[in-house]
Length: 401
Image (cartoon, rainbow, N blue to C red; front, side, top):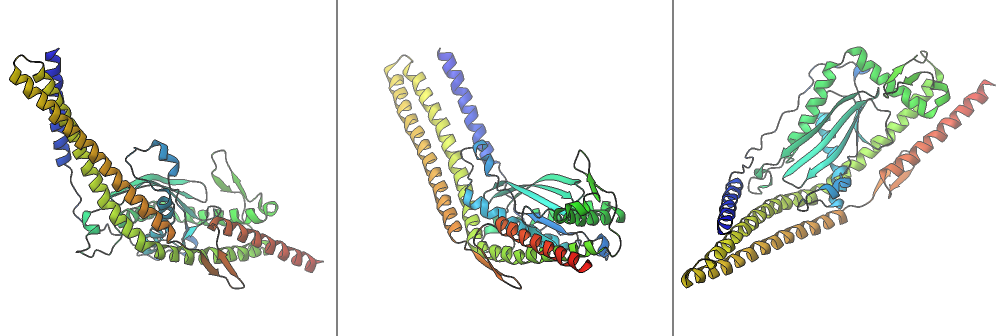
């Protein structure tokens, strides 16, 4: 029995040493160098210039039950980030000069040349992980990829006054990957993507008139059966409706821009605090684990000593047990201290959500208050466009009689 205890003691000692060495071997990123965006230097013909829509990201809250209990996720912050990150990606794509209009779009705005969908995997100020899927109007998936970046500790150093986005490299890499894929496509493929996007929009407003222009196979890939005739009056009206749709989506860009500006100060403050809290919590957890391991070692050593012959040895063993118990207690108290850090972040998250307010969007002929969700506002706008289209159709038909 004593041999087994000694063997267990040796294993615990080796484990403790291994844990300590592992904690000491972590490396912080020490650079703030930004990956440059690949700029398109050649003029792209308008017929090949693809418009890009970036959907509001999925906040990743459905994965909460799968996360480690110590991983910090605050729903109100994730929802805010899901609206904020697409705006940052949009700015990176616009910088590349490789695209037509780049917009943040509602979920139901799907008749776009290239659509980017994103979901947040992890975001705690230190690490940002995002899943990105890029799909064109034909239904072809360009790529699906997870992007991960660890922030440099210098990103939050107030003394250095670094003003750039801590995770700007990630957005630049996504922009570069998109541009690299686009360059692989031929001029005919680019033109076809634009044509299909327009026909999909036409089908959504006049399905009977444009039903036979497009077909989709079993895998959801679209193909063009025929194009509208040059100067087709029906297509001309559809294009007018589409321009109005773009008008509203462009107005939403002002909303997203204001949202990002409002969010930036409290969010960057939260992220800086979160970065420090993450590091502090990890240090506490490491110390707590080591304290528990060495506490257990001390207790076992005390038990071994207490079980051996002489009174002095037994007394030393009893002291070892007592000391080990105190070390264990200290380790669990450090766990409680880590929990305090989590609660601090929760309070910061609540204050961030409270800083967001509704916005008013000025249209040409009316004022729209965005008091609900953007999705609801866009749904109402599409219904208005449907009515405008039907009214125009009725006027045209009456004129023909």
